[in-house]
Image (cartoon, rainbow, N blue to C red; front, side):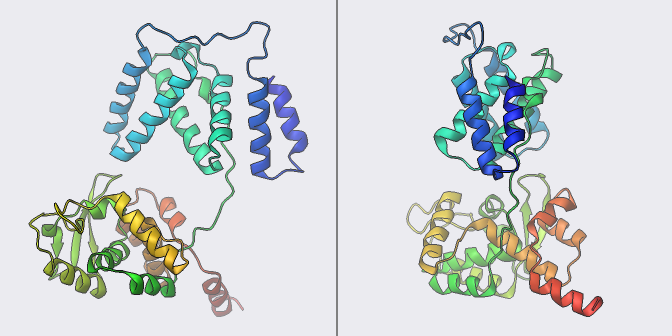
Length: 329
């Protein structure tokens, strides 16, 4: 059956886009699943679910690798959904089961190819660990091929867009938050974990604790960020040590969902796709354009590999043309 599906995909490759090819593969896998001489049985297993213990140990091993809690939650949710959907013991799960689950998941939920690849990665990582640790004799996820994801240029904010968002900000907190997100190039979790005591206004510095690398790094505040942050803190009437809090009592530490909702609302009013992580990309791109080296950008962003930094840095076509005229033409 695998060879038949591969032959069909190969025959249609020249005529279909990556998205259409993936859809075709999903349909083929779903429609041919279970077409065997002996029908597969997936009745509910009442005995002890051995996979739950294995999952806990797997997550513990990933925690030792310094994975963030958010990433661990994603791994856990993905594997739990998989195991509950298949209702099979770990050793009985086949490659076709995994293909069937991923194809059905995409068809029912309409997820992007990028998210489909993320799920494949989570599942492959778990089963590779199970195989290495001796829980299963063979790894059914080894033959899951990578999902071909079209590369899209994720554009940063333009100077005009950032100014538009600033003008629409309704509170000093929101204005200060946007400036801090930009100047620190911090991940949303890193910025929201900051306390007032973490800010050095004299040196215009902030020490953030990296979510992914678990390392502290010093980042800077622009004059605009320092000004608006001072103004925001001066108007605070609460005693919460958190740097950013909700606008109403009991003034709890601000959540990522609240920030996303705030930016989504501002973005809708401005006609801009606004998201917290976009400020990080914008700062790294702006700093690169102004001459900061890749190594310096990597350290500032807290990336373990320079390749990761390059994904964030958007090279504008106008800059490439200017450099060509200056250095080559």
